[in-house]
Image (cartoon, rainbow, N blue to C red; front, side, top):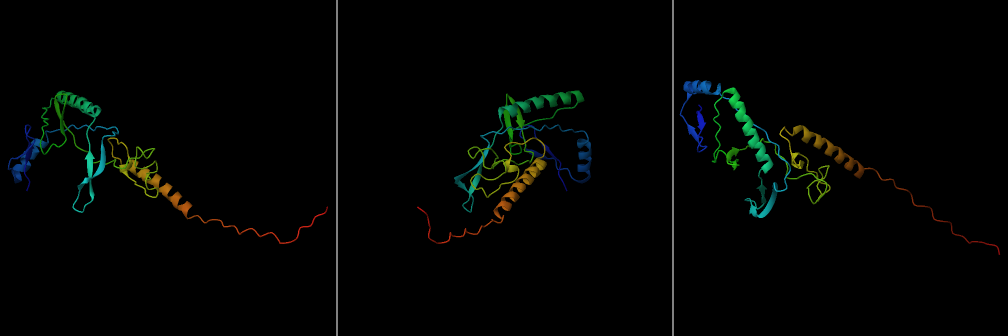
Length: 215
């Protein structure tokens, strides 16, 4: 059995209508077929303040440091969301559709915020990245261009965590390309470390004898 749920525009709390069985199927058929959802994907630039660190004051039950996440949207991204909201409003107007968009703070809207007097909410796309950012120096990154850790040259951190920023599309192909590139480097390193060394025999000592000369 399922329950037909709605989102309250004022509290963002679910409200169950207690509809089951045939009535539920009829209600869903009546409502879903006349609904349309417009969503916008926003790209974020790399920001130094967005980071994951560890703090000895925050530990799990085993005593290991827990990750401390610092994350926020830049004003550039927020302005983009405001512009996208204006475009979606125009789309609804041209369609003659009733706009029931309503964002409000609450447990179902952890990404809610207000910008320029308007309410917005955002959700992650599930494209995890960052945490061991790739860069050109150990002072600004965790791994180098080969995804090799600066502090441990024999350790490679391969994956989307090396990406300093990410587009709106799935990062799978980019991650695969980076992984293949790093594997080639790892193979070269292993090949060099196991290459047989050429050992030359020691030079023969000079024969002992008396030097003769003429005056």
